[in-house]
Image (tube, rainbow, N blue to C red; front, side):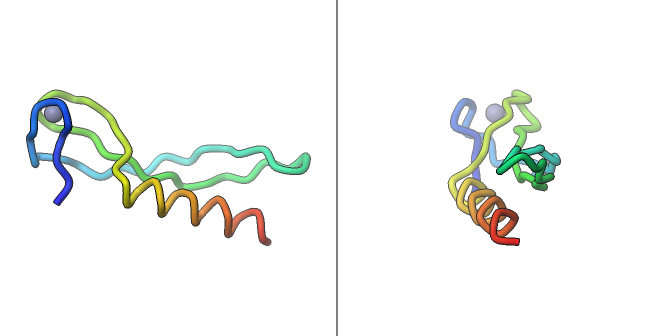
Length: 63
Ligand SMILES: [Zn+2]
């Protein structure tokens, strides 16, 4: 279970935002996942999300 490191809340929402990564002269739009705390509005990226985002970047570069 993901919880906020700042206020320990488990009231977390999962968000997705497209980030443009430039790679070999091309722009790769990556739908990056991140989290936001509903209690303190802190935005952060959880460990599983980091791993998932890394995999998305890898996949995009392999195309
Ligand atoms: Zn919080």
